[in-house]
Image (tube, rainbow, N blue to C red; front, side, top):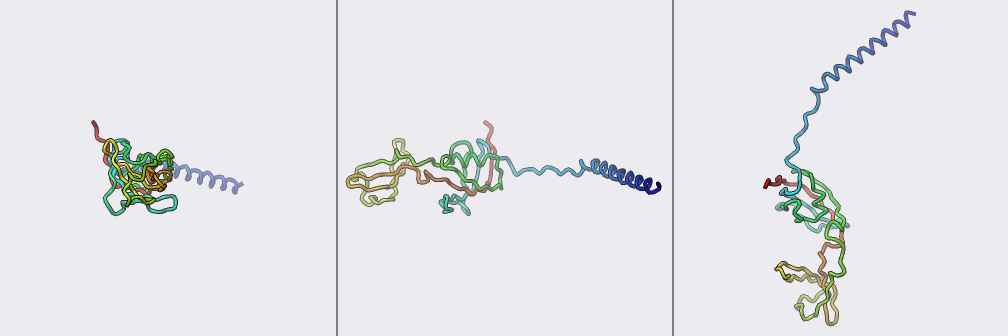
Length: 186
């Protein structure tokens, strides 16, 4: 009988100690709640002026372009100044954030468009540029530069490809946000 009473008292004492500890823990919880860490500046949103460091690679990992160690790329978010897929992937990032982004061709420069291949008479192309792969720059009606690459040379004509050189490719960006300025109130 004494053993049962002694075990019962021990169990009750242990339960009381656990209850007191739990209450003590509850009472101290507010004091031990971590203070929220302030994020580094505003997040990227429409109208933000953004500075980026980037490395662009293709599906094989070949570096196509980079500004690492150079001046950052500066653009206004939401203005269509960079490809749609990258712009979408950057929303909410803050200064110091880094991200690896794979952009499908539909959100990059799109698929290769067959209608972008044009055939023109040979005499309209300077002879030194009548080589497959040659890069031609012409001026559009509005004064904007038009780029084309010699795709094929035929007997009387030359086939030019006016697709963007990165059309038809998924692109991989490794980006680091160097700076974000919040959109200006107007």
